[in-house]
Length: 479
Picture (cartoon, rainbow, N blue to C red):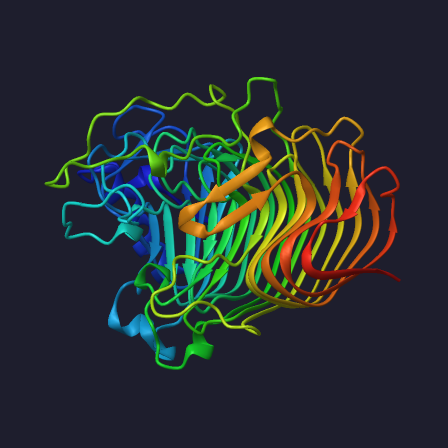
């Protein structure tokens, strides 16, 4: 038994049709179906001008339906009913059992951007004040939801992050296809903010303009409200697997970021394949629209040239980035705040296959493969790395770094390398770091470079025609 949204075609808008169907379904325990054809407008399109609010025990099926955000609207397409209310901060306000499922080609479309951007301080020094929080531009936004499934949906032209969760648990996001053109900043795919736990994010395809999957927990309210006890804001027990993806905004494919006393731990990342092609015309990195949106002194967005995907390459900064030396509110992550990260089966042509900053403990990386113009297998920034192992790191025989990879300096994140190195330390404190079974192709002359303190143990590294180490302050010892 189900309720067809077209049964409400007497309503004044598509949003009212859908919301009325959902409200009635909540009373009867019935599934709601949004079909392809809209009988109210006689179009194969549903225009959403107000957030569709979901109750407990909601199942909604998008049957070849195309939902598009209305021009000028500032709203999420879907959110749970309690989100952004006082009750959402309490255990009593937990909503349960929400299921959004696509059948056939189900599309959530951001349409034309509404010109509301994140004020992140990189290039947009002055932004007009808005009555809306930037997370209202997420396609889907869920706060304090338990047992939530989102599956088999295409998200295109996202105005900000695609699917965003805070203080939610027992979730599964599966079979999501992203179609972004990096024409606006911050087009993340799936993001977990404060307090998320027990999640599976799987079978993700397509491209985004920022991070495909991000776990972000800092003191900033963009990642969820602070709840007093910071342990409630930790993110843990997350599986990210089976991704065939690429980014067109020069960022990282998967990002783990924590600062301000919050922790990220017990994360499993596996089977990540970057699917973009490389060419001789590739830029070192795809152009990040964060760096092209500028404002005048009054906060007005200045005209700019539209980015054309492929025009300047699709290469990303890193496949996996764990920690960054920027973005904190009061203090950077301390050693021990990030631990229990397990990464395996990553195939990438990113500048850095793995980039680690601030802190990482008790973690492992296995079967990391670089191809195309992939460059560095592992970059370590300032901070401490302890009890971390890399096994089975391989460069394809034709893998060649970009001509602009030799010396890298990113001022805002203090990323710095000199020369061509397979592994690089930028002032890193190293404790029990191990590399085992590295197959290098000779295109990068130095295995271990940079500076720091501590020691690295290696075994089965084919470095005979290479310089084993130029690292200053780090002893490299064969097992």
